[in-house]
Structure formats: structure tokens, C-alpha cells
Image (cartoon, rainbow, N blue to C red; front, side):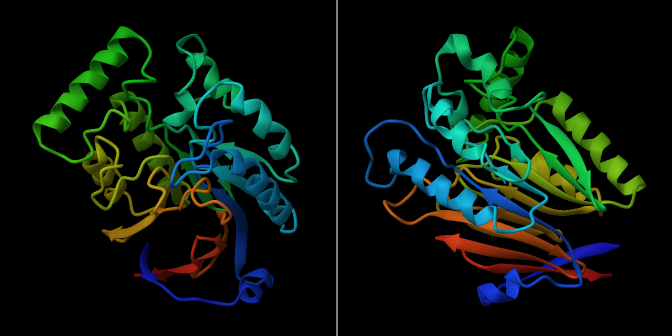
Length: 297
């Protein structure tokens, strides 16, 4: 059985760039590009994101990546913002995997149901497998005040938010969301399938699930319980909290990637290299280099 422990260290870029015999696969990660044609705030520089994204794509194309994942908040608002970013991402030499963020639904009400398709998604949550690893993309907007469609789903969202508020949890924010009972049932099915196939699992979501943070999923503890019940789960990668964060619980890494939109001229993205004994994170800009070691126990 594989379980993980974390080792933080800085390593030269050449170390990551060199092909290792133990390397299984490599992929790119971006969080919170969050573009819109709107004035900057003290922390977010929306109009700078396209240039940052172009430089990121140029760097990614220098590497043999299996895919690139954007962890949500591709745009900040306005459906037309997708039109600016799409030509840039079309230059990628590898498949783009999108994860839905809360700001991706900050569009006209009449256009909200079109957002997943506009981002190239056939389904709002999904999975795919590469070389013995299963990657599961979750939709943390499934239960939300802004992207739950249909009376039944809206009622489930309202009930969950009320429950979180009653518990006095700091993540009881209207700009967060949660996983529906249907999605959690689907997640169990995916993890059982991964265990049957002896696959290891990394999950992608826009919203954090751990450690405790105001940005977390409404049902973060439920998600933790589900993940902890399967030995195949290795890590959970997310955005949403632009400052970044890390936590380890029950042998699972929870890593929040820093937002690209923050700061005027400094970017943030990563290249992830999965090896037999570790996961290496090569950070660019504000994102730090890290190593997550894999061990047999």
C-alpha cells in the first residue's frame, strides 16, 4: 500500500528538467488565471493575465507534458472573457483539462449553463487515467448559490449552506460551494474502480478541502472522510485561495496552488513530475518548488 509523507526542499530547475529513469509522467498546473477586461485591484491584475498565460504556454510547450490542468477561475467575469483566453490556450501542444471555479460562473444568468461547454467540458466532473494514475476532477460549484440548476439541486445547496452556517464554520461563504450527494456517490465509484485497477489517485478541485480555511468546500470534512477511506488517494490539488496553502492529513497531501492573477508582474504556475518514489513540483514565479515523497508501507 502506498502512503505519502511530505518533504519540503528547494532544488535546482535543472534537476526537474532532466529526464529521470524513474519518471512516470509530467503535467502542468495553473490556478486562477482569472482574466477580465477590468481595472486592477490592490492584489489582482486582471488585464495582465493573458500575457502571463502566453508565457506559461510557451514554457509548457518546451516540456513533454501529458496534459495541463487549470484549477478553476479561468475568468473573473463576463462570458466574453473566454474569447481572449481561448486562442492562447489553443497554442498548447498537449491536452487542456479544465476545472470549474466560482468566477467562471460570474456571467449573465442566461449564459451560466453554457459555461462548462465553453470551457471544453462535456461533464462538470470527470476522471481520466494515465500510466497507472487516475486523475479525478471535481466540481465544487455543484452545490452553490450561483451554479446549482434545478429546484432539487438548489434546495440541497441551501440546506448544506444553512448547516455550515449553523455550525459556525468560517467557510460558510456564498462564494464557496460543495459536492452534491450524487457527486459524492460518483466519487466513491471512481475510487473503488481505482483500487480495483491498482491505480493511484490525484484529485483536482477549485476549492480546498484541507486544512481549515475560509475558502474551503462547504462539506470539506465529508470529502476528507471519503478520501481517507481509500488507500489509493495520494493528493488533492486546488486553487481558490490565491495565497496558497498546504496540509497533510491521514497520509494525503492537500496542496493549494497560488493564483496567477495576483501581483502586477509575477506569475504563478507549476510543472508536476510524478516519479516512482515522489511527486516533484517545479514552481514558476510565486509558486515554490516542493517534493512529495512516496513510500511503501
